[in-house]
Image 1: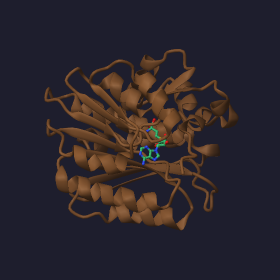
Image 2: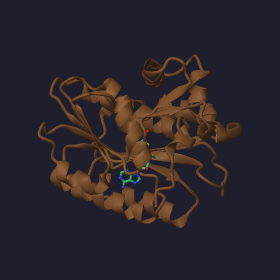
Image 3: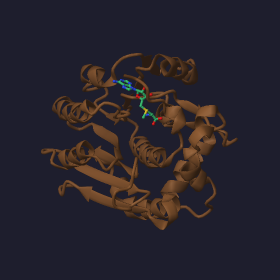
Image 4: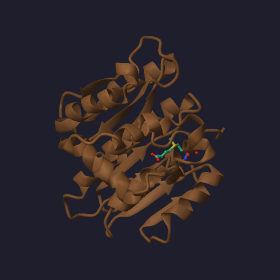
Length: 278
Ligand SMILES: C[S@@+](CC[C@H](N)C(=O)[O-])C[C@H]1O[C@@H](n2cnc3c(N)ncnc32)[C@H](O)[C@@H]1O
């Protein structure tokens, strides 16, 4: 079942959290000369019009990147995220997805492996990736394919796992993928995005992530509506294995700013937890 289309949601609060973390992680990896691989298991189309019928339908970006664009005094790390987004499309008519953000921040020495299962978004992703010999785009299941890519030849890598969670089985698949990934490539950086929902499976998934053993992790949650029983997606989380210290150091300042800016009628909130061995 592939009914999810990210074009409806591009630039929303979930993307802001995810892509701010992504930019911070790529900046961290770029501090060393040694090349790395960027693997995006659920890459999406790569670039989204904010003027399309999809985007205009629910205008989720107004409560996400729209709030970032209208704020002049962001903490340094969020300002850096905003400048990367604006550097890709200064017109503010389009919002980039994870693969195009990664394309813009990676160096000539890096390799990008992008997976997208939806045929239409796969085609768009190929077009949006352009003729770039560093990039390989595959119309395959990214979770299944990941195993075969680990460890990357450079022994440095960032894996972004960003499913749409249309099917509840995806929760278990993500947990198993993380475990298998760590067995093959324990020093890799892994980042899993997930929605916050008032649903049993979702709550259990959050608990299972935080019970993963033998890993160093940081879990960042941004709630845009902390009302008990909020319907639909009331926030999202990024679970990062082997997180760069920059994220740990500046998470509170940036999440508190995001909760203020993106919270619905003052109901924004955040939560930071870690494995205790960072
Ligand atoms: C949340 S969107 C990705 C957004 C993107 N990572 C970003 O940040 O811009 C999830 C995407 O995964 C695709 N997808 C779903 N199941 C997949 C699978 N097993 N392997 C690869 N792609 C999949 C969907 O078609 C959708 O485009």
